[in-house]
Length: 74
Image (cartoon, rainbow, N blue to C red; front, side, top):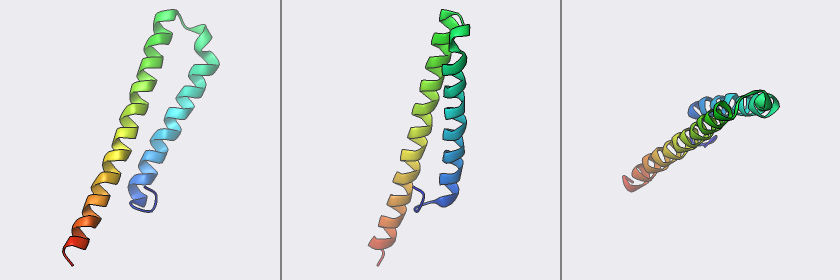
């Protein structure tokens, strides 16, 4: 991804960085939450991770498809 599309890579890199920071805080302070809040936050973090991964996969697919079309036009 980094070589295919450096601009989008930076965006997703920042999103993962923020998510990792949130995971760190969750692990560090999760014991202070009640059971339901803890479960809800864990689900939100997991869903966000899945979403960012899907964005990365989609961006890579679009970029590879674009390059394949360029090759087909030769």
